[in-house]
Amino acid sequence: MSHEVLKVSTSQLGKMKEHYKSLLKPNTPQNAAFAAKVGSCTITAYNSGKVLFQGGAASAEASRWKSSGSTASKPAKAATGKKSVDEHDYSPPSQLVTRSLLGSDEAGTGDYFGPITVACTYLTPDQMKEVEHMGIRDSKTIKDPVIRELAPEIIKHSTYSLLTLSNAKYNELQAKGYNQGRMKAMMHHKAIENVLRKCREQGLDPEGVFVDQFCQPGVYFNYLRQSKMSWTSDKPIYFATKAESLHVSVAAASVIARYAFIREMDNLESELGLPVPKGASGKVDAAAAAVVRKYGREKLRMCTKLHFANTGKAERLV
Image (cartoon, rainbow, N blue to C red):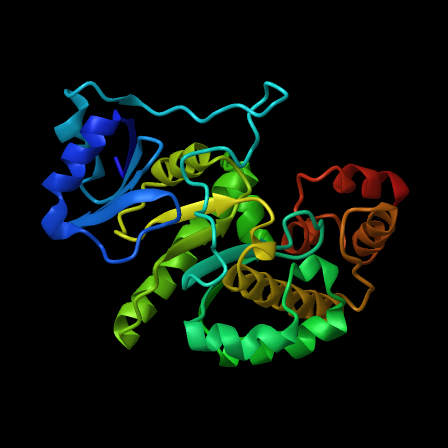
């Protein structure tokens, strides 16, 4: 198991800090009582009594304290009585902006035509300052011509990994029972691993990883387990929706992923000799029908996410 969360008393928190005093980390998140590193396990203890164990031996390290009156921590509910999607044990710490984190985001997931692209980026503090003037934000709010200009500049100023899941492979996995969330989790995990490896090779030491949340963290980790993957890094990993608005590394990843998606769509239009709209609207239905008329239905398997409702709508237009 790669993560554990305990809820302990104030006195127990003090005992834990004393126990780990020789392993304490110099920097702690906002509202944290202490942070320590034991082998491959990172421990973050908050003043609220929540203690988060992450990394390789997390379960074993947490088990030291389970017999001392601790309990499993449960996220608080929102005022409406319903738990917010961002209320979980992997929420990012406050004052996130200045932290040097890997950021991971994707593009193409809601588009009928074209692949899914996932990018992970790491910007050092100096690199974060270098890209500040670019006005990086959620790539969905930036026009394509600007994306084409921004992305190459971001690539120059970052350590990154870019993965592309072709439509043919997407449809193959979907036919085997993989849902899109599981595919995305696999891609994010691989891209993050790639960047962590590159950082080690370059002597860089990021403080953690920040993923633009597309499912609850527990579901994400379950998707990894289903695919025989696991989070074993000693770096803390955080999840939040709209993460691109919270940290520049996620915004940078968003732009790179979108740039790759746009280029794939350009290539697809050239290959088909037909317009290929983005999204999943009625215009997309008409474009898909044109593909069927020109090449036959099987061509859709190579250039679309075949299980989308657009497939049936397009066939009715042929």
